Image 1 (cartoon, one colour):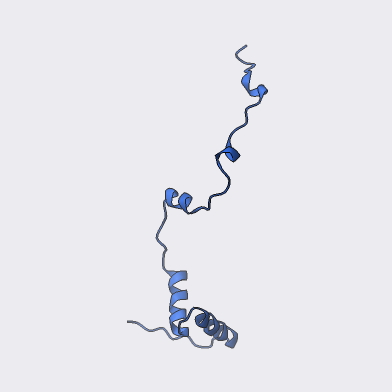
Image 2 (cartoon, rainbow, N blue to C red; image 1 turned 180 degrees about the vertical axis):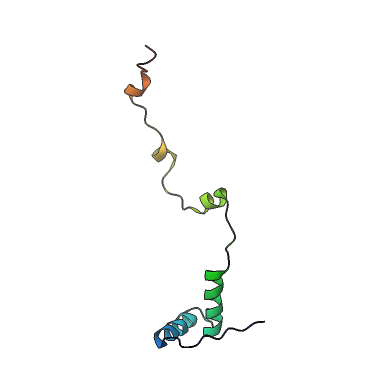
Length: 79
């Protein structure tokens, strides 16, 4: 497997990487690989149905009903 060596990284970046790796229970090297994969590799696409199903449910059907008023019942163009 290929290797990647990154030099001249700011100490704050390295410290942040180590802290993030610790929070995730991984080595800094493993965390670095994970970050690179998430940023650089394409994610599988989702279709509209999957996207809608992933949305949290709020409200109920009554919240989205269209309220008809008397003004919409009469069509002035039909006479």
